[in-house]
Image 1 (tube, one colour):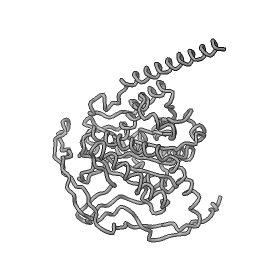
Image 2 (cartoon, helix red, strand yellow):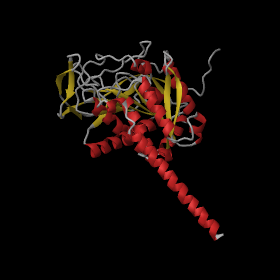
Image 3 (spheres, helix red, strand yellow):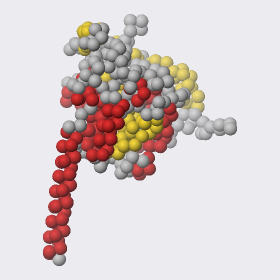
Image 4 (tube, helix red, strand yellow):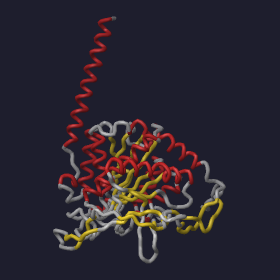
Length: 412
């Protein structure tokens, strides 16, 4: 008996040592796996083939990362989905875990490429052993290159004032000329139809959509938004605005010294800090109307490309840390929202709601530079932060309402 126990302990030690060695080897193998952006010192962004090769290398080298696809583009490209925190990539395996499910998406606008690069880096670092606690409570569903067709239409003059990538970037619409972030209701594109099928199959509790801003010269390194439609369940809206997003903002300021805030724009025509549209054709608003949590991020267009990637990566890291810490609460809020819609008054039209008092918005400045290839003007963020008081128009209130019925009857 003593001899058997000794042999068993010896076998466990040898197995554990071998496992540790294999894990160390796997981590070392990923040390040399770089995104196209990293490999070119952030001059270029990843092509579709780059992303697929990167994803396949991760899935082949890590037992914890699984690669599947959730549909096809208009030109027939597979839409990759990387899954971690589940036994495999199937919806059945993901749902059976009982964990909080989070969908992260990059590149819906293929000139706004920082999310695509940040998600690849996040996956690589996870495979290297970073973020070991995430999989205890979360399943991550990661789609780094949603607008894959638009990604391949690289031009040095796409998004002309944006500061890089200097080697060019893809176009905003897909191959059909459709803006995929306006197609969540019409579903005219195969990409949007694939997305909706995926969301129905995997039913993520949270959706995160990664963008780049279009132009206001503020001082924030990244701005963000929860769902904006007034029919978003109040409990979900409150949790995002009162707990999740403020916590992420504070942690990033403490760790990195960078300011993040709610998405907004200013104009001389209508003074104030205005968010964008509440309609459900937008990704974050659509997800909110599914009674799920949604977070939109917008890295600052006039930051360098590298800084935009890092601001996005840090944002996603903090989102996921908070989600792990509050995984059960997130599931509970979603479940309660699903049970509360029938009989509620729901907005059919809405208008901007002004903040009761002025808020402090940090405005910035930019400098003009010449693009080294085209010679055209691009803009670069300056280290300027000017607090300006203005009213914030960051939410919407209903102007017309209807009562949600218990069920619908659709004529054949």
